[in-house]
Length: 106
Image (cartoon, rainbow, N blue to C red; front, top):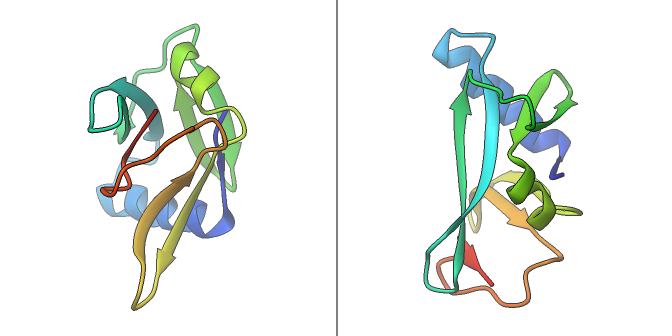
């Protein structure tokens, strides 16, 4: 299961508040595709399947399907807002190789 840093949890909570739907969860998934074989997908979701893996980080509900959860074990979602880096990034120790776009891996 992926973990969220405090910065990521705070930013996701801000985005959920802006949506005006407090029951939204952050769904993180790994999908086939991208230039390295797999890519990350993140979106807000209200549907939680019985076999989804869920966790709570500072009030942010995170949902991951079982297949993606295996590929995200030990991974961390972070958020940075600086001059050199801005946005969400995933540090995944399971990724053997990443590409220049930063959103696909193998």
